[in-house]
Length: 225
Image (cartoon, rainbow, N blue to C red; front, side, top):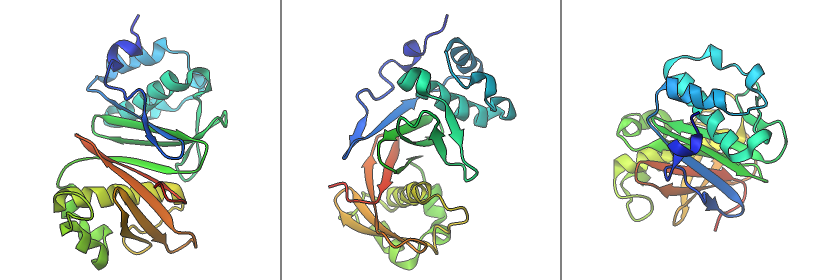
């Protein structure tokens, strides 16, 4: 019988990345094929297995969905049932914690907290830099070359800012929000950005971590520092 622990090993961050106050983020990086993941999934005791919608997904999307289900079950056992709102926001039906989910290529992440938040992971690459005119305003584009405020290169800074806006979008949970027109990001302190969203009054804050294979961002309504 396949066991998740034999595949996770040291690849899952235990203890998790802990972002104050009390936001725990678990990251699982794997290169497993759908067949192996399906065996892991079938051997697990998942409360929503009989009612899940995994059969609607194929290929990469199937691997993304099933990886998150397996990871969450490993963390929460029988309290891991997920419900998705019409906006796509995931919720734990147990009400045990606020949940956010992200994946990028072979990296899968889950964050759990008692407070509302939005989390994102993005693999390093040049895709975001090529698309800056689609999601960054002129003031934000000035941050791309500011290594004293953010990271060491325009490419990494673009990836960071894209991820930050993804995390903000998940926090706000409003369909149709424009990354460029409705979300404005500025530098706040080391490893923290602040943001204004056109549709809400409160200022938001985004913590970021530059990891070896990806950037991790997390958004909430109060400063992290």
